[in-house]
Structure formats: structure tokens, C-alpha cells
Length: 145
Image 1 (cartoon, rainbow, N blue to C red):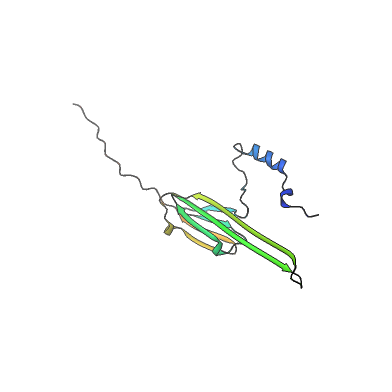
Image 2: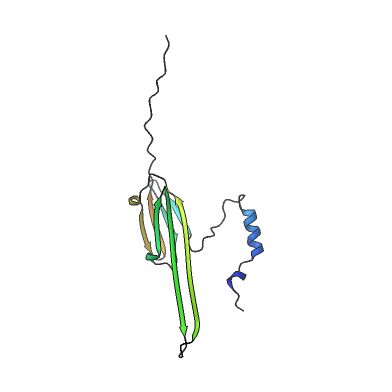
């Protein structure tokens, strides 16, 4: 028997899992469906692979604001099947959105980040940049004598 998706998730188990997971377990799994992220660190850059299965390039948007890289994806699907007389046999609609934010540093600009989307994976290459130290004022020590 088919049941609505709300019955697929066991509310009691997930309620107690969430209650005992945070703040004690920092390795909690991501609750964002369809947006799993792998991050690799190299000497001069980070490479992020974000899984976005079923999304098209036009559905994805990435922006940078106040040092945060924001990635969002929106998708709308509509499927209709009719019989010979034009009556609906099946009619489904899906509208979904997912979003993630990552702090990449305030000294990174949009031009620094390279993005490529292929086979459902958004690949972002983010260079490492050192924070520019502020000009240090010289402070003299008074010498008595």
C-alpha cells in the first residue's frame, strides 16, 4: 500500500535523534536533501563539489556577500498523463529549493571563484588568500637615563 511521504519518516525516532544529537554531537548529518558537499583543501585553494542531481545549470545561483558564499537551487517539475479522452490518469507537480552558505573570507571576490556545473555536480574552486595585516604603528619605548 502506498502511503504519503509524511508516514515514511518515523517522527518519534527523528525527534529523539535530534534532541540528543545537538549540541553533543557535532558530526550530525546534513538535513538538506540533494545538496551534499565535499570540500578538499590544497595549499593554494579549496575545491567544493556540491551534488545537485536533477537540477539544470539555469536552476542554480551562487553569490558572494560579506564573505559568505551562498549557493541555492530551485526546481519545478510538472508531469501529466492523460487517456484518449483527455482525462487525467496521473498529474504530479514538484517544486523544490535547497540552499547552503559557506564562509570563505571577506578578502575573496566573485572574480576569484571559478564555477563549473557538469553531470549534476557544481564544482567551485576558491583560492586561499591571506588576510592583509593592517599597517602596524611603531611604538617606541622610552629610555630613561
